[in-house]
Amino acid sequence: SLTIGIVGLPNVGKSTLFNALTKNDVLAANYPFATIEPNIGVVGVPDARLGELAKVFGSQRQLPATVDFVDIAGIVRGASEGEGLGNKFLANIRESDAICQVIRAFKDENVIHVDGKVSPKSDIETIDTELILADLQTVEKVLPRLQKESRIKKDRLPVVKAVEEAQAILEDGRTLFSAGIIQGSERAEPLRELHLLTVKPFLYVFNVDEDELTDETFKDEQRALVAPAEAVFLNAKLEADLAELSDEDALELLESVGQDEPGLAKLARVGFETLGLQTYLTAGPKEARAWTIPKGATAPEAAGVIHTDFQKGFIKAEVISYEDLIATGSTAEARAQGKARVEGKDYVMRDGDVVDFRFNV
Ligand code: GDP
Image (cartoon, rainbow, N blue to C red; front, side, top):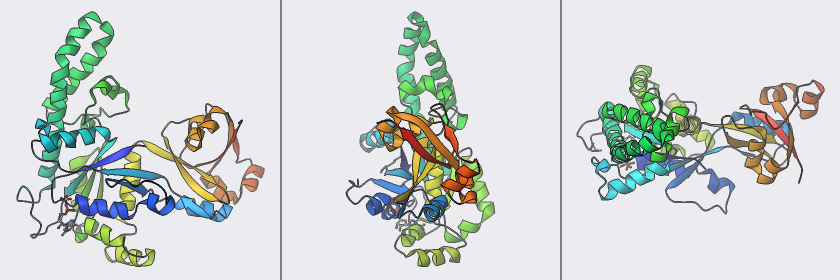
């Protein structure tokens, strides 16, 4: 499955955040026999629709979609020079599908900042610079060979052109992501063989003081720093505390700081979105469940997420939108009102489709 790598300077609250994430590990709760890896936190994407579906179908349990966060220890200035820790760090990022930067905004004289002062802007620049330098090295290493190759193989020219364009952006001190060249998009396609870092989608977690959680002016300033990437604001210590509390006590604590849900819930949702994923839903007496598919997946591809046999033997899908199902109150009533659609193998799934697949075995 797709993963989000968590990176950041030392002492910004990464471990605190990651501990909170692993305390929320849905694997531990729902799949007691799953292997839990120490540096991966599997977090549920909160989805209120599952509770509503469970009511309609009398489902015994609810299974949300999940996002995998990987703790990537040790960014250091000079990581791009590939010494020791730096090398391992870059290799770990290369394996992630998105990059989540944790940025310190909280003020605490007892927690030393590596650069002596709390400055989200300069921290972001420090991390971006290491990633940009690493990509520049990759580009400079392969470009002469690619240029030579393209003199004989004309079909390699688009790759050369894309790499030259990437080089110009990186030399300008910008990430490829911020220039709109994003993994999975057509523009990033010719660069795929280079395994670059800054084509990965970025998201930002600002670890803020509690009073900043409701400071819209402050938050807008930080959002402007990282656009077009998404920003999530949370207090890592508070998140760790919340993970220890009952739902009721957690809600009370959240309300006391002007929040209606944990920051981790937002992080899971934004992370899921950043990875380019969406869900469809299934429901029955056993469970109400959200299944993860890439945006643009067809009905047979969606069926394949449940079981490969469902994809191979796909016949059709009966689809009712979540809204129609809730409005009509049951599958039978939705059918009676003409709200149940029968879709074939070319159907492109929409978020919130409640689906029943028909297949040959
Ligand atoms: P890491 O080096 O990025 O993994 O940072 P840690 O999670 O180890 O945190 C470094 C220090 O900052 C620890 O003493 C934490 O208790 C403290 N810390 C983490 N998050 C917060 C926060 O939101 N507010 C305050 N005041 N301290 C925090």
